Length: 123
Image 1 (cartoon, rainbow, N blue to C red):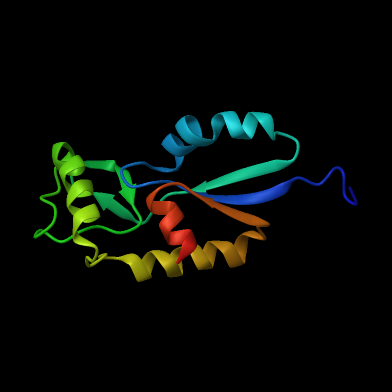
Image 2 (tube, rainbow, N blue to C red; image 1 turned 90 degrees about the horizontal axis):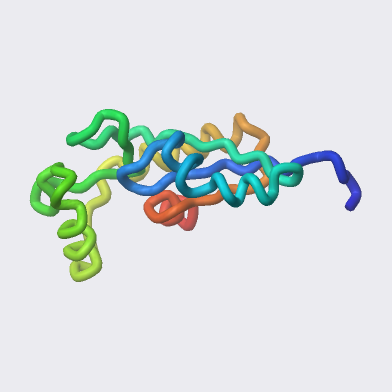
């Protein structure tokens, strides 16, 4: 390759109910190990704290008509979202601005998202 010693910098966005540390440990650890000299992952914490655990985050949240904010009802929330087709993503645009600001400041080559993070990336 043209720059054999330069690793690609990739911004990584976790899923709903995770944080940057959990994402790195659980989701990207093996990928990072396999690509260790070719890619450097930088995980970002989503700005919205989940009500049942202040260490866990989301790129957006859901109104009380969809979710009561409890950990044990996340699966029911997911099923309801799949059935509904449309919902109000609270904090979505703030997260877009947050990620764009990091993207512009970080000199990244790419972006990787998982679950809710992937939806944000695709938007």
